[in-house]
Image (cartoon, rainbow, N blue to C red; front, side, top):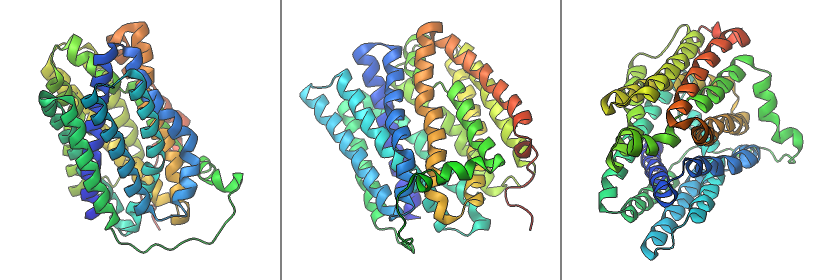
Length: 392
């Protein structure tokens, strides 16, 4: 329960920080390209450090790694708070701190993913993943919404609240207790570092699930462009940006609650692919919408569809992976997630600079639908997967 609460506060703080940095950058430069660069600067260090991070996670205390990551993110929020108060904020500072956030998340994501299976039995893992996701989605709803409200009092207030949340999250994780068995010492070689890549490559359902998320969200994500939609297309202020940023999490929270009560037990592969296709359709609707209400609904439905993707994919990866490999496999998975999120933000910003924000979002949504259809043929073992837990 401590991990759940810690992730609740940590995720809320992270979302507040991301919303604040996005709005901060757009206020400073007014550039869609710079919004995309924020995502790119977070992705590059996460990509470069991911495999090394997975090796570390498999050999060190995972709870302490997560606590350290929360602490560093709190330090980033504190630096931004001081920069705003002293009027030393700049485009370069925001991009530099985005690099730090990317490096931290290279360690945080695999450590968090590999920690959960140590705390619950395998048969309860699908429900635990849904319950964990429900808490995270609640934080993703509350974080941006709270951040948007706090913007009324000033940007520094948002950064200050993020500092407090990160400190609390780190303190809770440090109090977490579980049986940590240090593995036998093994030299760091190219083979051990790349073991997670080899593991995923040889298990086609897992490869199909994680690569599907990569290409679908890479094309279909519109998060980086939300400040433009809020300000220039839907004509709302920071409060509207907070609601738009939190809308996908409303749908995701509702779906995660449903999945804790009625977990997906049959036809999981087909359900995964159909959910990703629905996500793409929602992005097309959002891209064309000029109504704030319709945009919120489209984003909420997309969040529900994405939650189905998240629960099936993460449960499948964890159940197929032995504990000694979970850090390295989760690190590879985090590369796919990071690429779909941070690199997707850069892709959105770059295509928006060429096609405009509407063209970028609509083209990405159509691309997501096409990817989901293609994966039916490219990964038949995934499309035909019936259950998460293989019948004994």
